[in-house]
Length: 215
Image 1 (cartoon, rainbow, N blue to C red):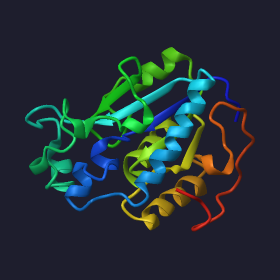
Image 2 (cartoon, one colour):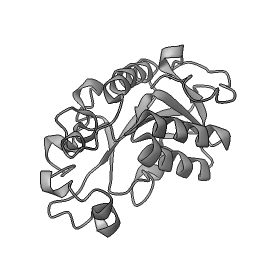
Image 3 (cartoon, helix red, strand yellow):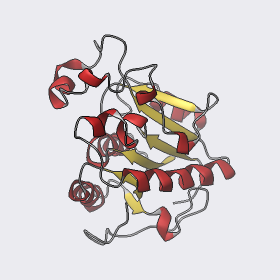
């Protein structure tokens, strides 16, 4: 895929998920390899900025009172509310400092796994003239995979940066990559293998199998 008309979409790389003192580690739902994923994502963001490629950050956040959390998500992580996890306006909901997300950056807030559902993401991408996406973030098999599937159904070619993603376990991370690559929903690439968000990329090819990808 060429870099022309590309955007980098950084999914939910927030303190709550990725910082050791965030809400998810505190309730026993920390992500394996989150620190490495953040470091690699910082490289990807820097590459995109150097090439003047749009960077869009998403945040999974809840309003005060958490009325927008919904019954299914409350059941999915019932302890989250007890630590005020991902509450809008609090440190836990902020994008991690390592990615340099500032007040002038494009941030799309969401309250569901799919970054396109009930958000301004699609009109934003259309307005920017984006024709293809490079995606990274957390959690690989939940919000990242759901968003990749949703992008695919909107006819966006997707490259997923595997070593810029993390899940609760390495196995869950790899299973998600296998599904997305196996059904050709995304090409799989790695910053550690030399992929440059700002450069023209050749097709990555078939997913090489569990244990062969960093991230």
